[in-house]
Every structure is written in structure tokens, then in C-alpha cells.
Length: 326
Ligand SMILES: [Zn+2]
Image (tube, rainbow, N blue to C red; front, side, top):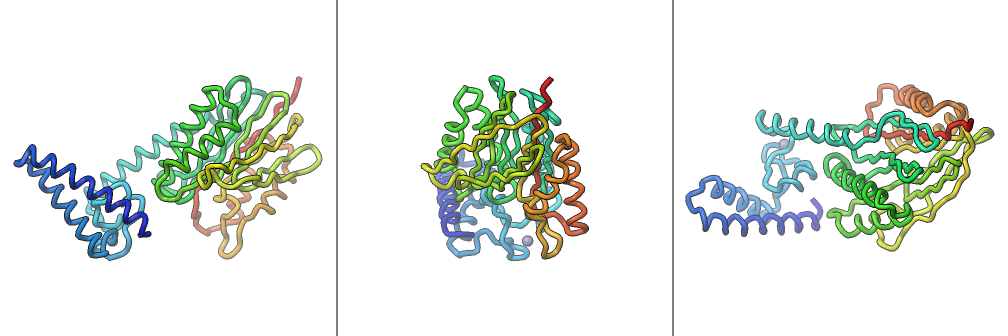
């Protein structure tokens, strides 16, 4: 475990010890408090001895996100007892349900745009962020990827989800919302997390404003060709002053925006990587398909490419197409 995190946890544990001691002073016969105090002392001993964060059974490092949420644990997931494993599974099931509730409606048609997305966490929860918000006649779209994996990444993802929703529906322009979210991540996040994101505002007249902060290129297809909108900024959460500039586009009926996370572009078949080039060709070939079919075509092509190689990352795809004008 890196030095900064150990120091952070040591401060956390020490703080808990002081609180427990105060509680024990008021309730000297509470066995539960006394046993917790013994566990806290034992964690401090392990920090002093340099064995903190290692499983007492196999001596491998304990999963970091579990340790950050409970610095007293002493066993890795493989070496939990049955009761502990069941409790963990219940927590994860609940987290999965909560995260699913944050997803936008499937196949949403709104403000002159058809949409479709595919959201597939690798484990119980995802660090990918996908949202669609209708506000004041515009459709706002978001696709991001929080650094790190698992529960820690999903926690930051849920905060970002709430921040974007709250700020946008307060009527704050998207450019300011992006810079506010950037500052918030810079100020509040513990362990150097950051977020790559592509997001934008799509209007019924075809005007689109896009911000790409360190995320993969957004693919734009029109009647004649395909175009890549590369990132124009660095990920959110690294520097308070760094805000991505807007790219402005005018899309016609049937033109499509396609956004995705690296679960697609960095999917592997042994040494080979799926790659943005293969995706761009695929999008070019199918550029007039509606969003739902475009997402399926992409998933089928990905399955063909990866074969039996197991997935190693969260995967999210999002397609938006401007509707036909009557
Ligand atoms: Zn172990």
C-alpha cells in the first residue's frame, strides 16, 4: 500500500481509537466497545510492524477498496469465512441494485434525438458513468470512466452522477458544470482518482456542443463519412484550472454520435487490442443504422474479436442519433 494511503489510514484508525476510548470511558462495561478497541490497537500494531494490509492467511495484499472502507479487516476476500463472505455478497448485490437505478431510461427518445446504450460492469459495480438528462429542451449526454476499479471507483462515479444532475437542473450552463465538477473532484477525492469524460448538449435543431476531457475520441458519422472528435483536455480531477474547451457541431437527421469506454477500445484477444481504428471502420460501414442496432452491431463485433478471451474492464457504449425532420 502506498505511503500516502497508509498515512491516511493510520490517521483514520488513530482517530477511531480516540473516539472509542472516549466511549469506553462513559460505558466501561460495554464488551462490544472494548473488543473494537482491541481490534483498533491490533491494526495500529500492524501499521507499526509494517504488516498492515496483508492477509493473515496468505500474506497477499488485501483488496485496497475494502481496506479503505474498513481498515480493521485482516483477511483477503479469498480467506473470509462463510458468514463474512455472505455479508459481503449481500452488500455487493445491494450496490449493484443501487447503481442500476442511476442508469437513464433505455432507448430514450427526447429533444429530437434517439439514444441507446449498453452498460456492463465487469464485477458487481462499475466505475463507468453513463447518463442522459433532458433539461430545458436540450438532451445532455455523459459518458465517463473513473480511474481505478471496483467499489472505490463506483463510489466516485455515483458522486459525479449526482453532481452533474444537480448542477445542470439548477440551470447552470454545461461548460460551468464541467469546471465545477472538475474542481469538486480535485478538492474532495482521496487517493488521486480522476475521471475521463465525454459529455455534451444536443439540441433538436442539430446543434451539439461537446466536451472531451481526456476521454477516447467520440465518433461522429454523417451521410458521407466518419469523423473522430479527439480529447481537447485532460481528465477531470487533476488540475483545478484545467477545463476542456467546447467543440461545436451541426448534425443532420440520421447523423450519429458514438461514445464508449476503454472496455471496448482496449478489449483484447491475447496480444491484439480491439482499437479505435476497428471501431471507426465498423461505424463507417453501419453509419445509417439506428442507435439500438448500432449498439448491437458493435457488441457482436466485439464478441467476434475477443473470442474466448475473458473481459478485463467495465464496458459502456452510448449512441445518439438525430431524428428525421418531418
Ligand atoms: Zn488471503
